[in-house]
Image (cartoon, rainbow, N blue to C red; front, top):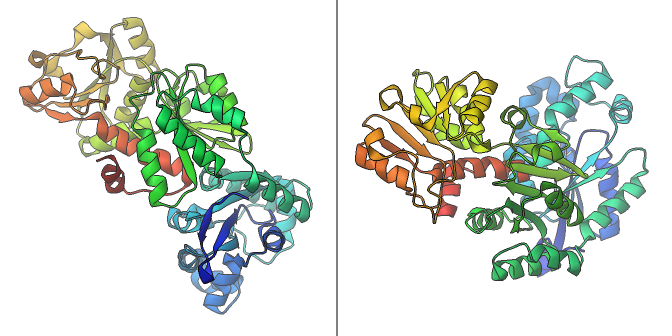
Length: 467
């Protein structure tokens, strides 16, 4: 078994396994079997809620509604943060990031999945209240669709129950918990990390039972994601190692990820746009932007999303609705995310790039204006978002100089290494407001961490981890 361990009574060590999923997936039945196999105590959050309220769940819903039930459930989950054993959760427990934070501490979370038809049939035999006014099968499909992101984020492993017996499912869970990547695969992974010391530490963690996330792209040595995610995983007691994959072929990256059972990928240049056709499903934002910076694997399926645009939007959110005229410099995946973010704030956007054709193609997707870099007009620009690699260390260039910037203008450089780029230095000298790419990195990383693990990290905690 993997040593994802927490302290147990008597000074020993014990496994903590959490089963999540929709009602009818067999969490309680499988959980009891699993607890017997592993010789561990069993906890059922629904039973604990009923014990706390001293009445059955239908009566709680009747008297206090779903809000009352969820408040009790939150108390129960908080009380299980330092528990050990096998924990079966209610179907909606992992929708609350606070619950996920408590349940994930020192644990492995296994998502049990099944066909909607089977789940609807099983639910029809129970006494739990309906969640919608829809017919049973339609309700299952609708609720599963609404919860899929939360389920995916909360899980370390996904097990398809189908029509398998509870004993078979328990066996699959045990197998998932005990899996280890072979040394040959770990060596292949280590060869793709430019830092041998970091790669050796990751290999040791994997050999000890840790799970894996990584940042993939080229070049990859500048990325701050490994250090940040290592600190956050330690803070929330998650059994993960985080490494680098220096590669330019999305299919090769995902192939290695599948062989290693890699959980999450932070995707950087030049893979953001190239990764899109390799995803089984895409979030609406990734589909609209045409770029993926976040990949989550669950049950052999690859889901792509984009958190970069959230990292652009958050530092500029105070300008929403002011009719700002914004210019995006660049026409790649980062620029597409910036145009999407600025549009969500109601800004009038123009895309300028060295290649006017690429700028025009990007602008046309979002109903924006476009032109060459030479068309930049300081007097007609309130916000500048720089979305190219120019100025990234060791590059000392800038697409605009001090004479093209002015007081009252906001200049946001998405490059975050160095934190003070040549463009931002020029912006400060011109009296403009300068926003470092570190702000984008912090906000997008917080959203990415939630996509990987279901835990909502305060931005102050991310900034502290980056300091």
